[in-house]
Image (cartoon, rainbow, N blue to C red; front, side, top):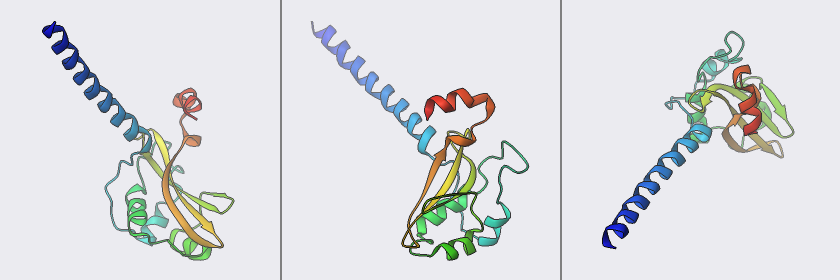
Length: 148
């Protein structure tokens, strides 16, 4: 009886370890940004615009500077005109939101990441990095539709 109980405890312990490992992998695949933070430089940011213009697999082009923008709250409280002056023209516009492509910084380099700058009363209220499935490659198209 003690051997069976001991075996169940060991088995439960390893099950928890394995679930935690796969949970971390899942989180980092969908929500992690694979870049090392570097200082934001407006001119460099603008030079790296249109990350998919020359290559469908560009890697994480502007993710490093986006991490800095989020960490230091550089855009917080700024107007739309001020944000466009710093970051250039956005790659996408939604109601009260500007989106800037960062490259493939999420999902171990498989998914496009975007910087979302949200406004209220023409002032920045939120800046986040998110994953966009809209730019998934054709080879992953079915997988991308399932994950939406």
